[in-house]
Amino acid sequence: MRAAHRAVGAARRAWRLAPVVGALVLALAACGFLEDLVPPPKPPPEPLPGGSCRDLPLTPSGAAAVPLGTWAAPGLPSGELVASQVRLPVAAAAPAAAGTSPAGPGEWQNRYPAPRTYFGFACDGLVGAVWQSASAGEVMVALFSADLARGSSWSLPGGGERLLAATFGAGRLYYLTLAPGGTTEEEVAATLTLRAYTFGAPAESAAAAVSLDTSRQGLNMIASGDVRPWEGHSALAYSRGKLALVLSRLMHRSSDGLNHQGGVAATFDADTLTQTSLLGQTSGHSFGTYLTAAEGGGFLAIDHGDNYPRGVNLHRIAVGSKTSRVVYTFKTEHGTTATSPAGVSYPVYEEISGGGTTYYRWSNDNNVYGELGAVLEFDDGLLVVFVGEPDPDGRALRNERAAGYLTDPRDIGIVKVRADFQAAPYGEANVVTDDLVLSGGPGSVTESGGFYDFNGGWAPQRNAGLRWLTSYPDVDAGNASRLKAVRAGDDAGLLLWETWTPTTYTGTWFALVDKAGRLLTAPTPLGAAGAVRLARSDDPFVHDGSAYLFDGSGTDLVVTVVAGDL
Image (cartoon, rainbow, N blue to C red):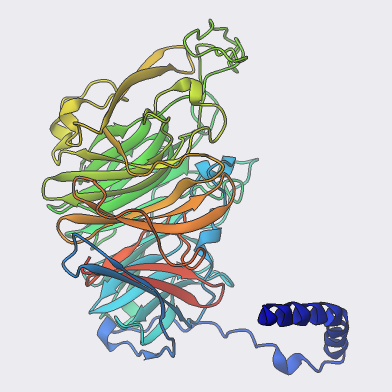
């Protein structure tokens, strides 16, 4: 108690002195006496020199790891997870990625995930990251020893353009940049550049760049400037000499006079950077993407569609082909006036009207009531993880519960899908069939429903094999958000997520699941609240049994390492 009283007394004295101290600081600053105390601005970063990763000069980082905790980890060979965090000095300001999508689940902006900020990779046993500086906009690359004791950072070509995506393969860094431009008054094709930097090549010939076709017949993307900062949300991946891109963009004006938004997929030759196939729309609208190399070659992806289709849309991508299936679909808010924005009148939607609200048989709902997670590929199928809004019984298709941005607590859901999902019989766009999923049976949710689309047509929906891993009781107390997932050995997965009230972050959590999606551990805090923040769009990077999460402090690079034979 005495210590507590002394602390209170000291705080009161500091509060009384604050105006005096503030005035003294201002006086000293006016006289120029504080100039020597203000750190000088960082010099421009050096460009990445030629040479292999192992030959690049690394200097001692001088950083000490801060332990976050050690936990039992059933299902992993090591039997435990160990998490720590390191702040690493870099040559250009590293932005705080968690602030790029600050909206909570109950806010309109939560629908639109921003482009990714940090991209992890490994080269010659070193751990690396690509990002865009928070100061002058340089595209930066950093390489560190696996223990993070030594490292350096340099700039890459493309500074001044917006970094959208990056990946690594066969000794080359690949990244996509978007030039500034575009207004609401004019329609200008976006300037997209696919770039590569080859480690081991002489500096003068290491960089390559190809301008991508963004015309109506190409990727069909216009420059939206700062009007839509989420445009360009995309993912890039490398597999066996090939690149795949999934890109969310605003399109050239269509025949109805509107600039529609949607996702598009394409493949490229990793040597020449030339486009090898344009695979068309993934989803429309497309709110979020995830893309990874598939075990047997090609790529796996998911994106979040709000209408065409309405659900989490799973894709298998190869040169010249894309096959897709909805694996989870969700509720729809319907019109509360008889006349739609198109001027057409529709009858009452009797089945969901009541409680003082009358709904009509049309909808134009852009909300997706959740967030994407990832696709984890196991030897017996694909585990798709996401965030959704189930009712207390686990059902996600109750349209009377779709009113506003957040009406039910957001929970983590999974569906296990057969590896050859493209061979499953295809029915209605938003219908998940029993022969598509492997996660059915006791404890799973199977439900049917549907919605009236903008033109008043009925669109059937069905979920099957749907399982929920969390069960938050109240939207005002807890909602899952910023979900991440990585493989944890051959038979398990590591999930990471944040919890939020409708507008405010409350904590960061993890859990282990088996390859069927069943919890191996209860949800557990990943250190103290706020110690680890998860960017809405960024993906963890796994190297040599550890998951690396990259973020920035505004100056330093902040690396959280979760080790455990992953």
